[in-house]
Length: 548
Image: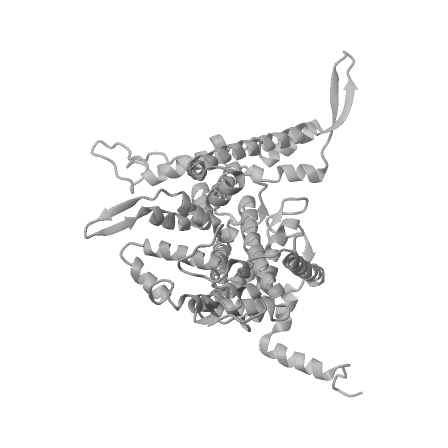
């Protein structure tokens, strides 16, 4: 017998051994290939983000082969007769050529644009799923920030790509940005000259947007995405409460082969759906808008939906101006929305740290909350979405006015008032809705579910028969932590604490302002208006067991 192995494919085995000896891929795969992932439809939202990002990269590489990022003037000579002989920019001409002369070019353009819209929408919905279920809590705060940065970069990169064709619609959007930049105090005009390479429209904006759109932002996003996935693997996946599920285990399917097979099929399903939408629904028909001219503006000029709320801030803000010494003017009508825009988004980024500070909850959380069991958090999220939608309506106030035959001024004032009142109303309605759902769960646990069967008692009374909940249903309604508000710190005296100062009469010092604010917020978050209606899980099971 020879003392060396005789495999079927010796060259392949030697290549695998050589690679594994230098990269350690076998040990890495052995440790992670059986990693368990829970099975729930909401977890596919993150996969849609990943798959649409891959579609954007693939189609974007194809588009860069034909697009010319230049604002140099040229005369269009092509198959689109209405623009034949018109002086246009090289960027606009190359986009027309890509749409009408390159085989499959228009379809790839539309897949790229539709995938970008779905990508941002999926990121937004995915973050809302994480928010409402409390999946951002320790140890996932850093991953929440990474997701927020991906969303922010997706918004910016979408705008850069939207602006590249140099048509009348995208040019109007760039002019909008120029006005925002000029509103910056002291440095606005300098930033504008640097950004555009001179007076608007300049000659540098399209090449610079192109570089940022295809190189800088996607490169940063790829790095953040890799870090996001690594942290998901490291922290293990969150899961909803259920029988056999605890904070220390994950119940689901192994990564290989079940999860990878399902994920691969889902990728092609997403790709096919985006391709079908792109083939059937036209988006961004630049030939209908025409080339950009600084002295013209496109009717119904609207940005993509994800930036509509930013334009709504500008449109509904009163045109206030403040004169400053030396003949300078501070344009508050643009500056205030410019400052409010990042604040609206930053509330998302900082919320996990704010909630942890209020609740003083330092434990690791791997089981997800049902939104009804966190009424204040759910109400805050609903209020944030309501504000977003109100401002989005403000960004399209002209379309609403023309299509519904309403007064533009009345719509603007309705949005101004609604920006302050609608989120408050939505917060209160959502909070009460969650408390009502909690009470319904309590009744179901204590009395069972309704069967629709009426029974007549010996004394003539009719009652409905209730059936006990199954163990799975009972577990789903009771497997949650009931938080308690943190009490205000009690005043301390020198006799109990040497580190606390007292006055000359030995009177205890009061807690600081920050400590009192924290206590009040904790009371509002977990007690009073945010108090859960049901008892703790242990008491729940004891009471339910007695009734059943």
